[in-house]
Length: 204
Image (cartoon, rainbow, N blue to C red; front, top):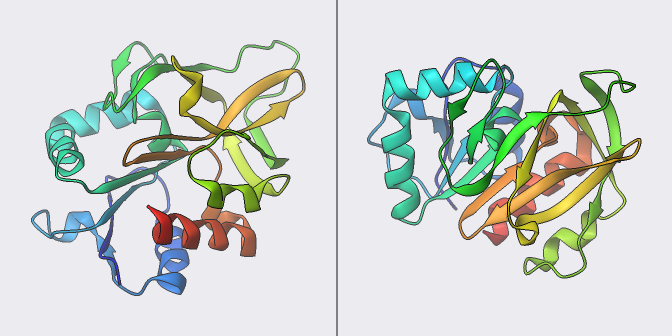
């Protein structure tokens, strides 16, 4: 059984994520409880602004701690805002730095007609040329989204899945080596969301 830690940095209700992981993997705790605890997978959840997350990471020393964990081979899984902070930089409430695990930026969804935030169930499409083939089972499934900003990787090979918000293609799952980002909320997406969490834990 893999040791899993959730980063509790004050942004978002993380209890639902904890409960979802607990269903498929019993060994899960919060990072804030013990910073020295070894883990196999670190989840970074979050609801809020990129700027606030970046500032908290600076103040708490999380940039250095998480980068060290990544270098040691820990799997880093970012969800929603947690996915955004994996990128090089973000432009919500100013220009702020991210973890720079995935080369790219986070910007507001650019379409004056579309209502923001994007809230609701969206069908995702999985890329055909992905390395992690277990993601194929989630092609054409619907997951729950809440966001106004989108991640834009410099290399399209980092995109595992995407969805269409009217005429805009938005990355829904991204990955690079031992890093994975999920734009939607699997912990709020019912059984299919729990199944995705299970497969990520099993296959990364």
